[in-house]
Image 1: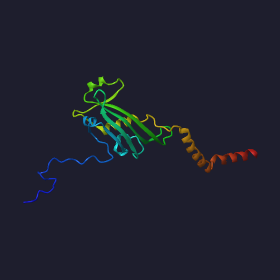
Image 2 (image 1 turned 30 degrees about the vertical axis):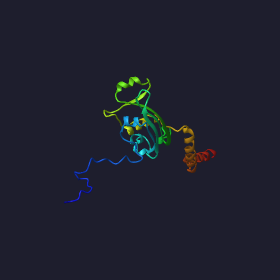
Image 3 (image 1 turned 90 degrees about the horizontal axis):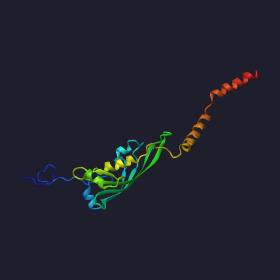
Length: 195
């Protein structure tokens, strides 16, 4: 008889548990009640590569997002996620079409509701998300949505003229190096008028 060693095919094994979430990635789904009951805090830096929708409009996905959030219950016992996120994205300036480093800072304050009927208990201008049937939140998607909403409608350098002046000075130096064909014509015209 064979020994009952470890095997993925063994009928004697208990339920298989996945490996814990890898370091540096946002949890995809969380059980909000458990997190709120623990007064959970997320203080971490995540790579932008983990937020593909945010990077769609960016020139690259290099960089990180600093996340500082707390999930708890408010005074009414409702689930609340609040804190801030910040990152820097390389976007295309819509004036000069050159890359512009864009700071994206987001203040997060979202109520997490089991049903939409609870929204009437919130302040009029409050933002909220409705949890799925099991009380879970797609955390990574929710935070990515918040960052996308904070992107500028028209990314641009603060002072594009200064930026363009630097480029124009370089271009002007290049132009002066090349001979202007009309200068030759002007000198010929000048000679014929003298004669």
